[in-house]
Length: 313
Image (cartoon, rainbow, N blue to C red; front, side, top):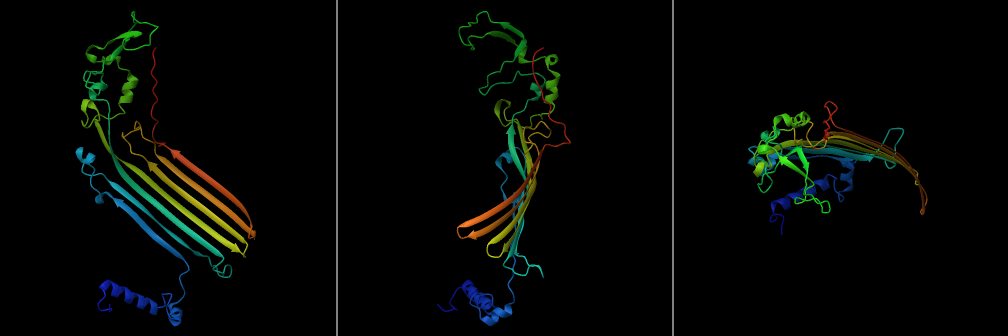
């Protein structure tokens, strides 16, 4: 097939090969063209950016079902790396003896996660369990601990069961606990939990919907320097540094959220290696490594979640 009959892309590729050959940029280029092309770049590297965004995604059904119109997602993963010989005038002149590499990568991520939970209803918070049922719709009786008495029909030779109770108690009238009997410390704990905001599940189940963000920010740097002494000695220095911040999705907008606390972390590592090749069958090496890890959890500006213990007086 002649060049006139070839597809346009094939003709363009052939023309590109001819032009780069004449410019001395191809292995088969004429010697004169290669000389005129000038010195080759000694360093190599790249720069990159990968991203995700919610404008490219469909809105999750669970989010739409609960009346929200978006579920933000922002993720950027970016960085660069460069490598090549080290040349210092009057000090390091041979480009084949000393090499370096430098790499950096960063992540910035903000992702909203939707989930359903069950929280106490407004009636339950004031002791009204008249509508509280199990998964089959049967009323869950609330017993008054002050009415506890021994069961005269209890048979100690048999295991305790619903038909062989060791103690008997009476339920609260109407399955409602009097307000005066509600423990103040429990009421204080309940104030940290949000009220229901949906009714997706039956019997007050899955009555709290949340679409909250999780954050992941991280930065990392890797550097390496290698020097060859003659043919049998090589020294390498490598160092890594990373740091970041993690924040999981908060189900509740306060310290009562049962999710993991915020975390700040950092890692530093430095390594120095020396290798001596005595002969083809004997290699001696010496290494020195220093490592530092730091992780801080929680927010020092907030009071810790209170600890509650229940007992009898």
